[in-house]
Image (cartoon, rainbow over all chains, first blue to last red; front, side, top):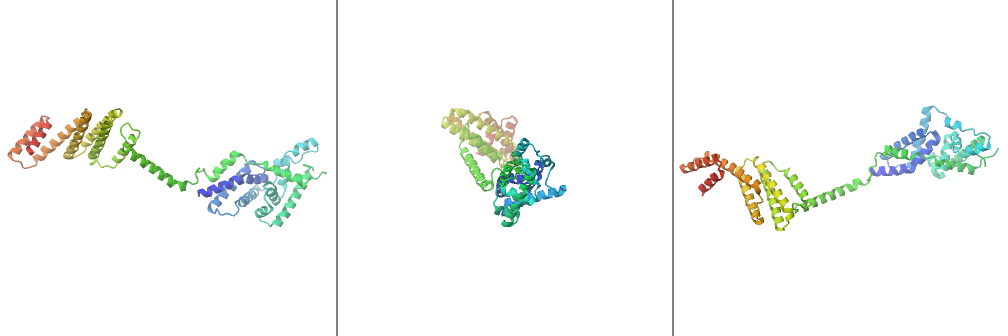
Length: 171
Length: 231
């Protein structure tokens, strides 16, 4: 039991930042992200101590986190992954100076990302923020590698369109 | 309208890696999820070895302490060991056990004297006299005056040997009082025992004289009278 605890402790240290960020980008609230992240690891530990031979603990934790976020929005009756905070920063205004300030804020990318559908969010976070390979992302998403590549391509396209539409930053 | 390049977009996305949970929260959540860190994961494997080593060390210290003398660093360990053993001695066996302890104190006193460790002499004599007092305390709880007298006589004899060696009375008042009390109990026992027996005329006369001497408080004379009559 002590060994399982030690192993899961390492998994926690390795995954906590990623799981928190994964959830935070979807709920856009520190408090809710903390609650759902805690719950993710509590459930993960409960399962792990009974079955420490889980093949991919990281994928397992992402799956729990994903389901918790879905449950959270289902309970809240929300249809979009957009919070009032995001709405406040949607329009940067036409002024160039204002635009420069706005571009330095990570909030815009976050807001556009939050507008995307869930699959697109997941594939972008896993591939570009968590630096997972296509194979690993495919495993997490429970899709084939080809289907994952297609989803990633479409997700980036949707993100780019969202940014262009809002004129957040230019090439 | 300017277009967002894919490279810039990915670069902006990667800046989102700066989103991190607060360190305090990470730490407290880990504790909440996994419970308190036991600190020593291999404890179950090492525990028997640690306990075994500690036990062996304790045994070694206690064994080594048995040769210590009053004033030595390990002497208190020796006393603790003796007190622990005394807990398992029955009430009836206490006088003899206390005599053995008193004899130990005498042996220590003798060794101190032999080694000419004058600095330890005073404590060694005190330890002996305290042990004699302990014998006296338990004598009153015993119902065997014959055995008591044997015990005390042997102790007095040994104390006299050490006293002669040191040229000083190591038993002090404590041993003298103990010897007197033992004689009183023994004479009282002899008188009551003789009263239950069928005696000759001369034996009856001796018994009467013993009673008279005991009534006057001269128990030693009463005892001598008895011992002479037995020769």
